[in-house]
Structures are given as structure tokens and as C-alpha cells.
Image (cartoon, rainbow, N blue to C red; front, top):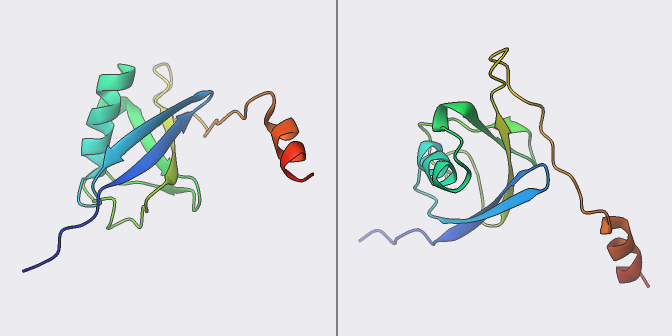
Amino acid sequence: MQSSLQAMFIRVKRKKTTYFLHCDPSETVLEIKQKLQSLSDNHVDDQRLVLVATQQVLEDHKTLADQKVENDAVVALTLKIPETGQWEDVSIEKPADYQSLLDSESC
């Protein structure tokens, strides 16, 4: 009997927003986009997911495991620009106090 894959979560970030999604490594990227559509009202065809660590654009028909997306991975969400049909650049904004948090941790 094959052991089942462990549930995991990924952090999907766009600008100042972070979505924490519980998922399974066997889920496809399309299934993840459907979860995001219910949270953000952005149609799956207008979403592109990029694995931040490698800058790899994730393919809809492949599973998270197929594309080496691991637990606690950070994935950027970019949207299609209606006027041009092009994709936004990855844009993840750090909080205004991000540097002060880093400075306080190093003390």
C-alpha cells in the first residue's frame, strides 16, 4: 500500500497580500488557482503562479510535487493585464517595518 502524501501549505503573495493555502502535493496548479479564485475573485485564466525560490512559472496541469513545490513555499501571484494580455511582473511588497524587524532580531 502506498503511503499518502502529507498535507502542506504554501504562501501565495501578491503586492501586500498573502494567502495561506492548505493543499496536498498531489493537487494541480489549476486546483490551487481555483482556490485563489474563490478568495480573490481573479479568474483562473488571469492568474499566473511563480515559485519565488526558482522564478519557475508553475504549469496548470502539473501537480505541486511534480514541480518541486515544498511545504511552506512562497509562490508569487501575477495577474494578466487586460489591456495588453501580458503578465504583471512579480510584485511582493515587504511591510514598512520589515527592516526594523530584522534589525531587532540581530540584537
